[in-house]
Amino acid sequence: MLVLLPPSEGKAPSGRGAPLKPETLSLPGLAQARQAVLDELVELCAADEEKARTVLGLSEGLRGEVAKNTELRTAGARPAGEVYTGVLYDALDLASLDAAAKRRATRSLLVFSGLWGAVGVSDKIPSYRCSMGVKLPGLGALGAYWRTPMASVMPEAAGDGLVLDLRSSAYTAAWKPKGEVAGRTATVRVLHAQVDEKTGAEKRSVVSHFNKATKGRIVRSLLMTGSSPKNPAELVEALRDLGHVVEAEAPAKPGKPWALDVVVREIH
Image (cartoon, rainbow, N blue to C red; front, side, top):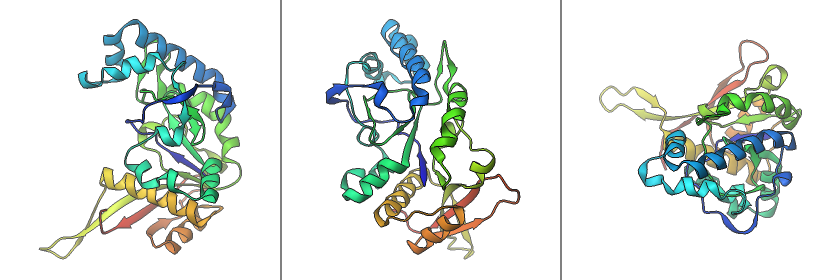
């Protein structure tokens, strides 16, 4: 099973250890593309702070993120699973997993990134600011930039098992499973179900914060139990066994991802 995750906008500070070693990152086929993005990002942030802030879409209060990007080659690196913070990663809580679950996380989790393309949770990276929605002056829109290198490495990374795609829309732009890989890919939407007090009818809505937390808990439960579904149909059964309310239908045409709805009635 391969699980595709979005990053978080907020990130923990860089570590105090050794700086980034690009050759140690997962998916070595992305090395050249990573270097190109890193070079342009560092140069942009070092040359013109105001332009960099505009390009990166940063508010005045986040001006310090530009300076942080100038030090990407020398800042201490730490595991990506520690760098990424936020709702999904708080719910996933990688640090508290037992040893076996941590090994499963290292094997199966990939975090998509505007800067790195995608990294494993054990890959050591510095803290940075560069979303997939950024359009760099030289390389252009990163979502489009990453499509070609991703197309060459992701099918191999997906192997012959289930792909659980939990990325947000900005990050799906970098790689969309096709053909046979798409047929064993499942996407998840989290719906909050509420009963209208006046009509008694059930209404469902997508709540961003809750959506992220639920996805983090889903991944955590799969890692903790050692569940390893081989395809979307097995994933549906595994999630139901874990107590989730899941609605799903096989796609009408072969070579299309499954779309799963996880229905939750209590927000926590």
